[in-house]
Image (cartoon, rainbow, N blue to C red):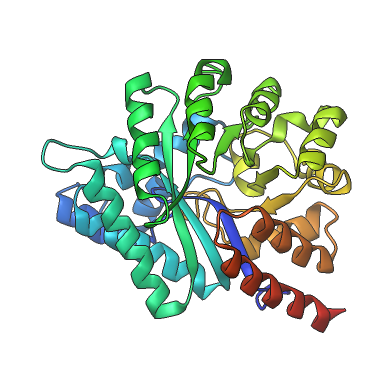
Length: 336
C-alpha cells in the first residue's frame, strides 16, 4: 500500500469497537462469555459485514466487546493492545474514545476504568512511542445526571490520560437540542469537545454542535448538501472526523460515488480520516486512505494534508503536535 510509510494520526476510534480479535477472545474467556467454537463464526459476531444493511445491524458487533470489558485488567489490555496495533500500521497519535459509565458495576467504579485505560495507553507509548489520549463519551440515552458525571470525570482526569469529551448515540431519538446545557458546561470548563453529529440525518445537529463550542464533529456526513455550513466549519477551523468504510456500512452514505470527502476537502473543511471501529469495520487508517485514493478522488499528497489536519485539530499538547507535524511534512517532501 502506498500510505504505509506515512506518519498517521487517528482521532475517531472507539475502544470497544477496536479490540484486536485475539485479545477479545481472551477477555471473553476470562469473563466467562460463551463464544462460537469456529473462528469464522466468532469473527462474524465481532465484525460487521461489508454489505451491512443498517446501523442497528452494525451495532450488534459490540455485544461481545462490552460483555468482556468487566475488569481493570481488561481495560488496561484493551487500551494497550489497540494502541500497539495502531502503532504497527504507522499511527503516531491516537485518540481512543469510550463511555466508562457503560461498564460501571457495584465494585467497578468509573475512576478505576479510566485509570486502567490510561495506564494501558501509557504502556503502549513506552513500547512503541505512540502518543495519544482518551476521550470520554457521554451517551444520548443517558440521564442528564449520568452525562454530567462523565463530564466531571473528563474534567478531573484531563491531562492525566484524558484529552477531551464526546457524546454519542442515537441522534434521531435524542437530537442535540437536548444537550445544550452539557455542551455549555464543557465550554465553561474549557474541556476539548468533539460531538457525534450528522452521522445520519439532521444537518441541524452539526450546526448546533458548532454553535455549542465543539472543536470537532464526528462524521458530519449530513452537511454534504449545505455549502454554507461547510463554509462555517472551514472558517472556524472546526475539524470533521470522517470514517469512510463505517459510513458506507451504516448507510450514512449509500455509495462511494456519493461520499462527500472531495466536497468537504475542496471547501477547506479540516477533515481527518479515521476507522471509527478498527475491528467492527475490519480496517485501518492506511486502508481508509487507500479507499479514498481509489474511489473518492484523493491525490497521494493529499493524504499528508489529511494527517496535518488531524494533528492541527487533535486534542494534543503543542509539542506533540509539532513533532508529528514535522514527521508528516518530511514524508510529503520525500514523495513530491
